[in-house]
Image (cartoon, rainbow, N blue to C red; front, side, top):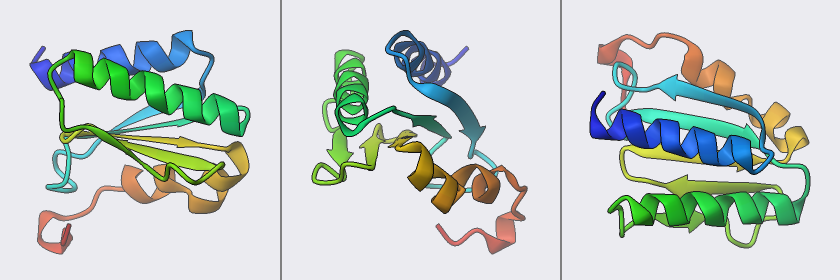
Length: 116
């Protein structure tokens, strides 16, 4: 396993241990140049979402990704943790259902149509 795959597994384990719900990982390598993987999870409340995002950020930084950051700090319903080659979305379940990122990114997109 390469370093980013190991880190992906570490993040998934961290989310699971901290009671995140419906954790999924999407391989973006053939879909986008912005990252290798996207992880999507749900939290149960704004505090839970905030806590999960902070714990994920700490894991990324502990693994050498010092430039990682949390986007959506003011939002109570969604956080994005930017791990450079690993993007982690943590949603309130209703917002997750609204955005349907799993559906969007799980479909195979031809390389010539990828603009990101």
